[in-house]
Image 1 (cartoon, helix red, strand yellow):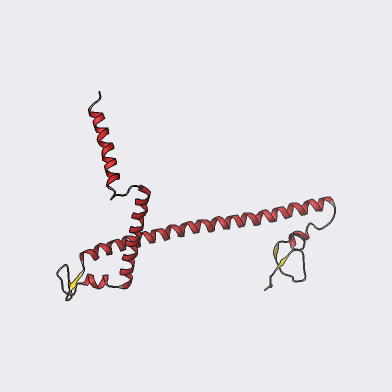
Image 2: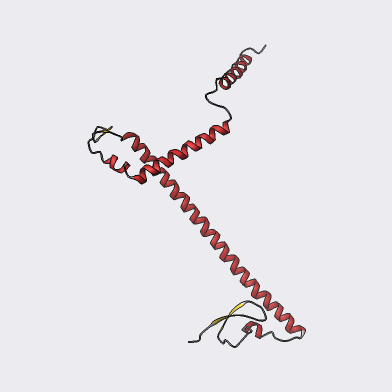
Length: 173
Protein backbone atom coordinates (compact mmCIF):
# COMPACT_ATOMS: atom_id res chain seq x y z
CA UNK A 1 0.00 0.00 0.00
CA UNK A 2 1.31 3.42 -0.99
CA UNK A 3 1.45 5.98 1.79
CA UNK A 4 0.07 9.30 0.56
CA UNK A 5 0.82 12.65 2.13
CA UNK A 6 -0.38 16.17 1.50
CA UNK A 7 1.97 18.66 -0.09
CA UNK A 8 1.54 22.30 -1.09
CA UNK A 9 2.76 22.40 -4.65
CA UNK A 10 5.51 24.98 -5.41
CA UNK A 11 3.92 25.76 -8.76
CA UNK A 12 0.15 26.03 -8.21
CA UNK A 13 0.37 26.45 -4.39
CA UNK A 14 -2.61 24.16 -3.90
CA UNK A 15 -2.57 21.27 -1.43
CA UNK A 16 -2.09 18.02 -3.36
CA UNK A 17 -2.01 14.35 -2.41
CA UNK A 18 1.28 12.82 -3.48
CA UNK A 19 2.88 9.41 -3.19
CA UNK A 20 6.51 10.54 -2.97
CA UNK A 21 7.55 12.84 -0.13
CA UNK A 22 10.64 14.01 -2.08
CA UNK A 23 8.55 15.69 -4.79
CA UNK A 24 7.72 19.38 -4.42
CA UNK A 25 5.58 19.77 -7.56
CA UNK A 26 2.28 17.98 -8.15
CA UNK A 27 1.68 15.70 -11.15
CA UNK A 28 -0.54 18.24 -12.94
CA UNK A 29 2.10 20.96 -12.70
CA UNK A 30 4.90 18.58 -13.67
CA UNK A 31 3.33 18.28 -17.14
CA UNK A 32 3.54 22.00 -17.89
CA UNK A 33 7.04 22.81 -16.70
CA UNK A 34 9.06 25.06 -18.92
CA UNK A 35 9.58 28.70 -19.80
CA UNK A 36 8.46 28.80 -23.42
CA UNK A 37 5.15 30.60 -24.20
CA UNK A 38 3.25 27.35 -24.90
CA UNK A 39 4.26 25.84 -21.55
CA UNK A 40 3.42 29.08 -19.76
CA UNK A 41 -0.02 29.17 -21.36
CA UNK A 42 -0.63 25.50 -20.54
CA UNK A 43 0.47 26.15 -16.95
CA UNK A 44 -1.93 29.09 -16.56
CA UNK A 45 -4.84 27.13 -18.12
CA UNK A 46 -4.14 24.15 -15.87
CA UNK A 47 -3.96 26.33 -12.77
CA UNK A 48 -7.18 28.08 -13.73
CA UNK A 49 -8.92 24.74 -14.21
CA UNK A 50 -7.61 23.43 -10.90
CA UNK A 51 -8.65 26.54 -8.96
CA UNK A 52 -12.05 26.65 -10.69
CA UNK A 53 -12.66 22.99 -9.82
CA UNK A 54 -11.84 23.65 -6.18
CA UNK A 55 -13.98 26.78 -6.07
CA UNK A 56 -16.94 24.92 -7.56
CA UNK A 57 -16.50 22.15 -5.00
CA UNK A 58 -16.24 24.69 -2.17
CA UNK A 59 -19.38 26.49 -3.38
CA UNK A 60 -21.28 23.19 -3.57
CA UNK A 61 -20.16 22.34 -0.03
CA UNK A 62 -21.25 25.79 1.20
CA UNK A 63 -24.65 25.45 -0.52
CA UNK A 64 -25.11 22.03 1.05
CA UNK A 65 -24.20 23.44 4.47
CA UNK A 66 -26.71 26.31 4.04
CA UNK A 67 -29.43 23.85 2.99
CA UNK A 68 -28.71 21.64 6.00
CA UNK A 69 -28.76 24.71 8.26
CA UNK A 70 -32.15 25.74 6.89
CA UNK A 71 -33.50 22.21 7.30
CA UNK A 72 -32.37 21.99 10.92
CA UNK A 73 -33.68 25.48 11.60
CA UNK A 74 -37.13 24.39 10.34
CA UNK A 75 -36.95 21.27 12.50
CA UNK A 76 -35.94 23.39 15.50
CA UNK A 77 -38.87 25.77 15.00
CA UNK A 78 -41.25 22.83 14.57
CA UNK A 79 -39.95 21.37 17.83
CA UNK A 80 -40.43 24.71 19.60
CA UNK A 81 -43.96 24.92 18.21
CA UNK A 82 -44.90 21.43 19.36
CA UNK A 83 -43.38 22.08 22.79
CA UNK A 84 -45.35 25.32 23.07
CA UNK A 85 -48.53 23.47 22.10
CA UNK A 86 -47.87 20.81 24.73
CA UNK A 87 -47.20 23.45 27.39
CA UNK A 88 -50.42 25.26 26.45
CA UNK A 89 -52.33 22.03 27.00
CA UNK A 90 -50.60 21.50 30.32
CA UNK A 91 -51.52 25.06 31.31
CA UNK A 92 -55.16 24.36 30.41
CA UNK A 93 -54.96 21.21 32.50
CA UNK A 94 -53.44 23.18 35.39
CA UNK A 95 -56.46 25.49 35.39
CA UNK A 96 -58.79 22.51 35.70
CA UNK A 97 -56.74 20.68 38.36
CA UNK A 98 -55.52 22.63 41.36
CA UNK A 99 -55.02 21.34 44.87
CA UNK A 100 -57.67 22.51 47.33
CA UNK A 101 -56.02 21.17 50.40
CA UNK A 102 -56.08 17.85 52.23
CA UNK A 103 -55.05 16.08 48.99
CA UNK A 104 -58.24 16.88 47.08
CA UNK A 105 -58.21 18.44 43.63
CA UNK A 106 -60.76 21.02 42.43
CA UNK A 107 -62.09 18.22 40.24
CA UNK A 108 -63.12 16.62 43.58
CA UNK A 109 -60.76 13.69 43.21
CA UNK A 110 -58.48 12.63 46.04
CA UNK A 111 -54.97 11.81 44.78
CA UNK A 112 -55.65 13.26 41.29
CA UNK A 113 -53.13 11.93 38.73
CA UNK A 114 -53.14 15.26 36.91
CA UNK A 115 -51.76 17.00 40.01
CA UNK A 116 -48.82 14.59 40.01
CA UNK A 117 -48.02 15.52 36.40
CA UNK A 118 -48.46 19.24 37.03
CA UNK A 119 -46.28 19.11 40.15
CA UNK A 120 -43.13 18.22 38.19
CA UNK A 121 -40.72 21.20 38.41
CA UNK A 122 -40.02 21.23 34.65
CA UNK A 123 -43.76 21.45 33.89
CA UNK A 124 -44.23 24.27 36.39
CA UNK A 125 -41.24 26.15 34.95
CA UNK A 126 -42.45 25.75 31.36
CA UNK A 127 -45.96 26.97 32.24
CA UNK A 128 -44.46 29.97 34.05
CA UNK A 129 -42.19 30.76 31.07
CA UNK A 130 -45.14 30.51 28.68
CA UNK A 131 -47.17 32.90 30.81
CA UNK A 132 -44.22 35.32 30.98
CA UNK A 133 -43.79 35.22 27.19
CA UNK A 134 -47.49 35.81 26.63
CA UNK A 135 -47.50 38.72 29.10
CA UNK A 136 -44.51 40.24 27.30
CA UNK A 137 -46.21 39.83 23.91
CA UNK A 138 -49.38 41.44 25.25
CA UNK A 139 -47.38 44.36 26.68
CA UNK A 140 -45.64 44.85 23.32
CA UNK A 141 -49.00 44.86 21.52
CA UNK A 142 -50.36 47.43 23.96
CA UNK A 143 -47.29 49.60 23.50
CA UNK A 144 -47.68 49.43 19.73
CA UNK A 145 -51.37 50.37 20.01
CA UNK A 146 -50.46 53.68 21.65
CA UNK A 147 -53.80 53.89 23.42
CA UNK A 148 -54.13 53.16 27.10
CA UNK A 149 -57.15 50.94 27.54
CA UNK A 150 -57.79 52.37 31.00
CA UNK A 151 -57.68 55.99 29.87
CA UNK A 152 -61.19 57.45 29.97
CA UNK A 153 -60.12 60.39 27.82
CA UNK A 154 -58.86 58.12 25.02
CA UNK A 155 -62.11 56.15 24.95
CA UNK A 156 -64.24 59.32 25.21
CA UNK A 157 -62.37 60.84 22.27
CA UNK A 158 -62.94 57.67 20.24
CA UNK A 159 -66.62 57.59 21.23
CA UNK A 160 -67.09 61.30 20.38
CA UNK A 161 -65.49 60.84 16.95
CA UNK A 162 -67.66 57.80 16.20
CA UNK A 163 -70.79 59.61 17.41
CA UNK A 164 -70.06 62.67 15.24
CA UNK A 165 -69.44 60.43 12.26
CA UNK A 166 -72.75 58.61 12.83
CA UNK A 167 -74.62 61.95 13.09
CA UNK A 168 -73.10 63.15 9.82
CA UNK A 169 -74.22 59.97 8.07
CA UNK A 170 -77.71 60.26 9.51
CA UNK A 171 -78.09 63.98 8.79
CA UNK A 172 -76.81 64.66 5.23
CA UNK A 173 -77.96 68.32 5.31
